[in-house]
Amino acid sequence: MKVRTGLSLVCVISLVLVLFPCYVLGQDSGPPTCCNHEVTLEPAIVQSRIVMADSTLATIGMSRAQFVDRLIAVLMPGEQVSLVYSTTLSLDPTAVAAASAGGLSPEAATVTQQYRVPREMMRPEDIEALDQLVVTDGVVSIAISFRRSGSSVSAP
Image (cartoon, rainbow, N blue to C red; front, top):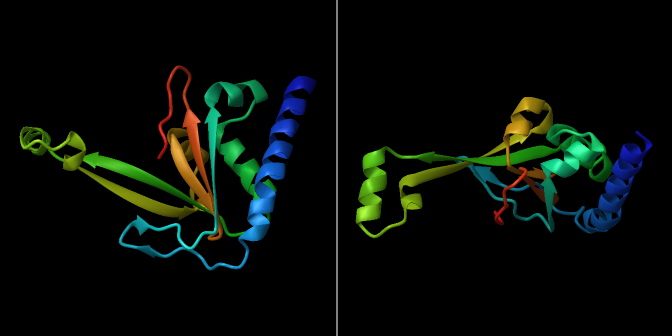
């Protein structure tokens, strides 16, 4: 139990030491613009990326939602924080086949939408289901990729 607590504390302190100076630099910008489900993280001055393995979370005894909440509490205390995530919908199978036949990649027959939701509006179960999300207060944006055991994560 002491090892988990110590490891958790070391992780949080490391994140604070790495990301807090970046947060201080970016406190003068306004929130990003949002239009038609398109989320632009501009004019965010500070953008960081974290890749967290589920096995690491299991070792320190945290869920994805708990990790996100602790990160927010440490790096963005008192701020209105939003989570940005995307969904990709495939068009009907005939459109995918037509795209492939026309020399296009199957991704050409998909639609990707991004959503920005205040943190307090998302349930922990919703966060557990996401493999990638962005935590932002309008100035600082932190992209988080969760890696399931036995898989690799590509850059978003």
